Image 1 (cartoon, helix red, strand yellow):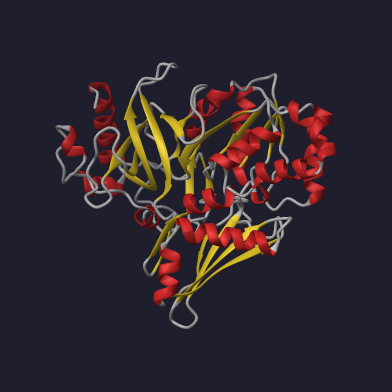
Image 2 (cartoon, rainbow, N blue to C red):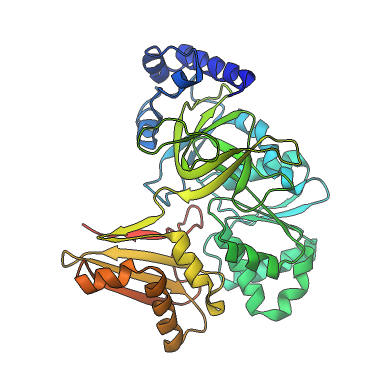
Length: 420
């Protein structure tokens, strides 16, 4: 850790000891004289965050709960929780769009979902400061009428930029792809910004296929921390540069101790600015790698995001990741981009797994081929079925758009665990 960065950490620790009741009690037990000392501080978990912020408690607040928004987390991996977002956080968000170079010449359609999730609001504030022309459409479970209207807006206002969660952008892209008479507007879109979900390589390629002129960028963050890392002009997909006011660690999942450069582990963030709710060693719940590597843009660190630590299906002896399922589904052109949901039940005391997949032209032969490929590539499944460790594994093809989205965000909850 560089001396300047360590000084920033000591400054925020000192601030928290004085201003934040929760940290006053915790941090006074630690002497911070070296990097290893910082790694001894316990992680701040979502549960601790919820128990020490409004409406439960004010213990994590550095001042009166004013000059802020009350937002809610997305709820894809746990129950939604309330988040206080300091107005000062928005002063730093312009860098979110660094890789797109947004400004007064851009007309942006904001397709994030309005409401408590807050991304819709925060995006509009940042776009306003950048001087963009903003079309605040909003989006979640888009109807055909909604998609048609979005296409009209692109054409009428020469909108060149789309913002939204990948599921929403892909829904618009797929609608255009299936209705070829709309494709004339595609070259107008030259910038796409997404967040809230990871983008699988096949989904990224599909966006580029439909919008061939588009530069696609994202940012990485949590509702609690706001932005953690951004993409410059040279980075895309799951590679990011940490913001200078965020200290990112990769820690061992079991010991919570910091890992060296290039090692895979849990992403932990410390907010270095004195915000309303400062975070020291906050566990994001995401898996990643941090590389000490120079980028042509001048940054010296690159953060690779590997997905949520919860993005694993674990049923008896069956273990597989959502990325694995997505890769298998995307290998079938009829199912691109892949939209799916896994449901796990155990009504008779033994687990049953149903893989719901959206598709428009599905045949019995396709279902047979997908199941065969799943069994070949995830051998845990047929082995567990044969041994009786799981009772059933089924594929259920459903109509496009029929898998429910979370109303507040438009995201799809990929794993529905109904086991009792």
